[in-house]
Image (tube, rainbow, N blue to C red):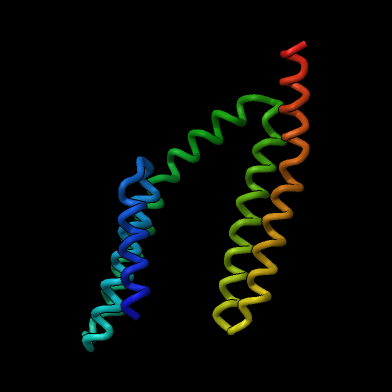
Length: 146
């Protein structure tokens, strides 16, 4: 138990020292999770309420970031050749979420090996998805050099 709390705090401290807002948000979540574990161990009956409040705060801060995403997607859609990039990005996000949720479910029910296989499969799928774009970048770099 103490080991988990120490790892959470060290990881949260590392995240808090980064430039990105998302990493700082993750740091706050890790610290909050450690706090909830401590509260549960001391028999505090309101620990689930604290966890729910933290989850709602996290969700609201993520929702505020969607406006930035919407602006970026509308900017990208103004270019006719960008449609395939937007589709690939959306597919990559979908693969990531699906793999994450699926592997978490497998781990929750005690099948960590299957969960790990899902994660590895998703990584391979993302590499396969990126290959055409890597080829495009390399051919563009080759034409610039020549």
